[in-house]
Image (cartoon, rainbow, N blue to C red; front, side):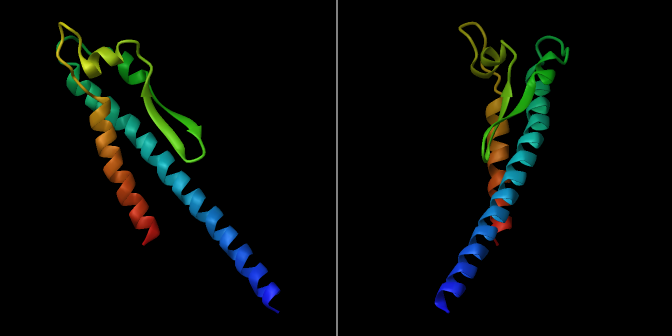
Length: 115
């Protein structure tokens, strides 16, 4: 009798684990997609010394690295110069503020899921 109950419990826990993993993956994916918009907005704000062509915005994207692992990245070759500055140019970070915003919203979304 206990083995039937234990098997049922183990199956139930496995289903719960899979459901929670899917929900967390959806949260992370949606927040990463939202992060692209935030990064583009931040990039527009810092690109105020020249003109805005949209190249930087078009090169900000989401990459899925693995299970429950997404990255918002900019593949523009000059992104690092903007983010960290150079010897002649002050830093104009646009990705780190995006990270800070996403960190807060992701934590809040995960807390809401678990409560």
